[in-house]
Length: 145
Image (cartoon, rainbow, N blue to C red; front, top):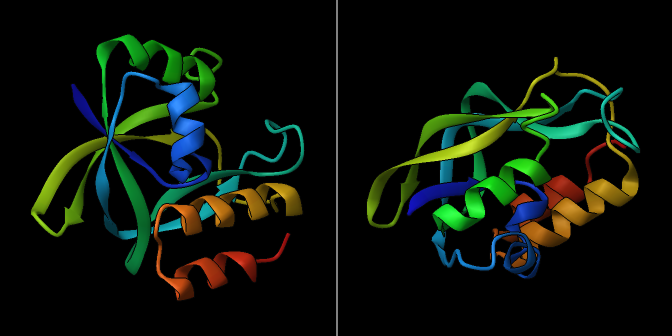
């Protein structure tokens, strides 16, 4: 098993149950020194896609999944790794148990552009369902789209 950090739509445990059925949720944490942003507007069906960029004094709420080997290829296909939309990256996440090495997906495009209202709402709903703090969810809901 490898530890995966979800930060956008994959924060939704029901969605992850379909995308990675052999991979249990382990918990949540914070990716410190990074911020959620959007980019690759030309790559998405309806606006810019979620990604993260380094940003001191910022943090991103994440859900941690123990990804089974059987689900890794499925996740890569879903995230468009073979199409060069996203790539995997290794980072460290802070949890209540301490710092954990994880992998996540980062967009292969420059930052910029706006997400659709539907996509941004989906991300905020997913964060809320994963137990993100109210102020974090409200910041997502207030972002421009």
